[in-house]
Image 1: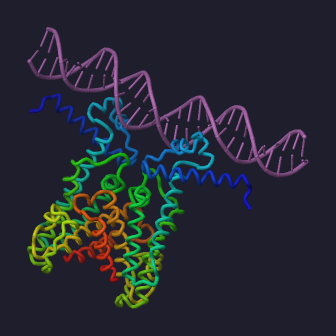
Image 2: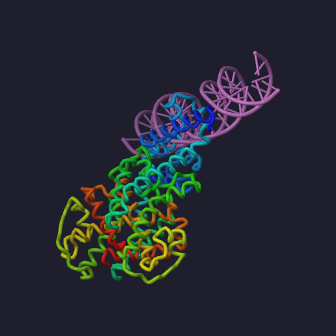
Length: 225
Length: 225
DNA sequence: CGCAATCGAGAGCGGTGCTCTTGACAGCAT
DNA sequence: ATGCTGTCAAGAGCACCGCTCTCGATTGCG
């Protein structure tokens, strides 16, 4: 059982993270200021360092929280009982919706890395959650016989063993070609969302909702769903 | 004929841009400091403002220069006499090579937008150059009869008229489906490159070169090339 | 040649991340 | 209850940032 001291400490640390998230949504990651967080919480800037080791550590916490929130959104949108194609579309829409609702957090996760900052290993499992959802859909589709039998090709230099295991495991319908396409559609999804969010589609696309639906529908096709 | 004053002014302005590019490669866009540029050039920080109105203006110049350099690389890699599929692969490889050679400039162009900075209209034509190359390949392929005849569907809410004109214009083989796929592969290409550059493939892909080749080969397939 | 435009340098403003010291406070053991 | 120990907020301070202003020096055109 945590002491009273530890409890209030955890509470204040949480308040700092919340304030940082609010500031992130307002001014973006690069402009996130520890002093502003301290101002918002009504304490001295130096006091914040009692709870957060550095600005980078605060960023890391926001990154992990972001990956977790996005992963939870993706998992929540996946209905294992639905058809693989519909599952794929639903997850894609959920990822996009989360990105549109949290543009700065999305930019923090999938935009340019913050200079001088390298994400610690802690972020990896949280970052993988969306990929796990996609892999589960692909694996279920293979087991359901939706995907045609493959050549059985295997090449760990293209897709690593760990990732291959997530991408439906060893199933006759999942060969290296399918795995490559899975990684491709995965990155394509975020390419599409990033382009929309970062303004590279302005002037080219009017109805972003409908365009996204057609785009991920096309991606489902290359996935074989 | 420019006066001697104007010439030395242009020269110093160029030196400032070069130093900024060097600093960009070292510390990234968000940490680009006008004072450090001034230090590197051995002049007072205030003197730089004689040549550059603001840090944002310097960033804009770097962005435009970056788009132009990338566009030139793409154009230079495109051999109009080659087969459409080979042209597509060559342009993709050239774009990736440029990105790998100039990671920070690439991040400036296709990563998270710099906070508090909105790209002015001047950047649009430079940014469009890569898309123009892709559109030219697609149009040539259609005129060469490589693409199957389409449905003739047209929907400016999906792909705007200006972009549609770039994407091969009005040709029976190019319907809205092809245009959507073109925009999709375009953003997918940068999604793939961004994922590689920003580290989202670490642990999943070992041989990035071969993986990229297979990925853009797949993209060529969805393009119909 | 003289005057106006241009230029470099310096000081200064308010902001940042981060460190160090100081003093107040709480909790626990004696 | 007292004294010790660990935690805390606060402030001063360092070096850096973007940007502005002023002040001489220099330059080049009329």
